[in-house]
Image 1 (cartoon, one colour):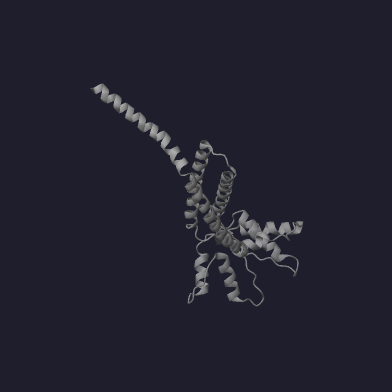
Image 2 (cartoon, rainbow, N blue to C red):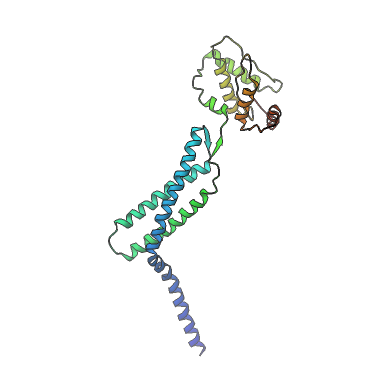
Length: 249
């Protein structure tokens, strides 16, 4: 009697294992139309989400802001899965032959890609702001293409950088006739000082003979990413920001 029970149990176990083997493929075949229908809808939704993010990115780039790497990665993944899903949908449309193996494979692919699409749609909601403000100084030095390495200017550049690296020096002056390139030289000094990591932060502002204090404060605040709230003493807020970094040019 025990042997009969054991045999029956073995048969039941084998049936269950067969069910596991064939159950999922059968479900993919059974859900073929449903999986592709969901895939097409999710592709449409992700395209809308991608276009929405692109509009924000374009606006941020036009405002000279730095796009977050996480946003760039999301855009790349979205483009890739939309392209892959589109090819799979195209294959389905062009495949007129009824082949169970092909239907199973394509249904399985459609189900997996729909899952990735859903995850990207959910991730889009957590992206937040697409960009970071870029300091005005960064923009200035990156566009400083008019710098030419004349021997005399290189000598001055090295002297200034040497002085800046001296912990006892607090102020460095560069003087000369108008139009000889003092401002260009100073921009290059800032670029090299940042590159050589002589300072934690480098900011740039031009001070005229009759300086506009508010304008100077606004330019510095913009490079720091600071906002002057109503009622807040501007100089105090700038001073507090300056104290955050140990080495400042």
